[in-house]
Length: 155
Image 1 (cartoon, rainbow, N blue to C red):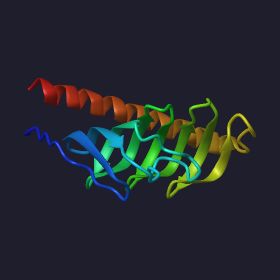
Image 2: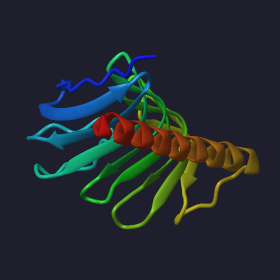
Image 3: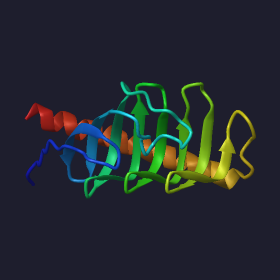
Image 4: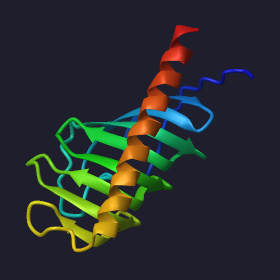
């Protein structure tokens, strides 16, 4: 099996640049957010600082975050869970810079079931279990991508 390492420039609906190290479906990706548009990870009402840096570790498919993964921004926002085509899609947990959390099921970056943790408790333990499994999967995928990138860089 050959190791494939690519450096790529990521383009999205917002102005950005990024670098990634890619092997199969796992990637570590860092993106510098530039300018006036909201990032896909950001909530609709969340202002993105022009100096914020986002780091994604996890599964990657067709140049998009797809599968389990973890995204952390330098301004403190982080998401761990399931992704589909660069959007939060499936179960996961978003932690905001002020420490509040929202967890539940996302569809196309919008929380459709679940609640903000510090405001209202989750209504069903099944959702909580699914969120926990998604977060564990995201952490595992992030660890695998870090290990693979370290191996790729050492060669």
